[in-house]
Image (cartoon, rainbow, N blue to C red):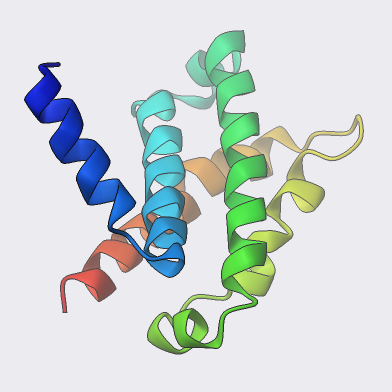
Length: 126
């Protein structure tokens, strides 16, 4: 990346408000999950330990960002159709402890996460 591109990227990010950074980050980490899954079957995905571990980390980060968003009334109002309480609990519901529910995780990353990502894009494009 050229220095000019780096400066433009940094300037754009530096000019974001805290609320914009949270939404940007949420979309970024959701998109990472979609990219790591890459339309693979459950068998293909779960046999790729690196992708599975990366998605687990993404779910943790998404949960943490949702917790922060949930504390900001203006974001909850703008994204009123999104249940940030539920998203904040994703890590605890899917990955905390030793008993992973792989079928639930696959449903989450192949259905709910792409749906949530598309909702965020749609709301931001209004």
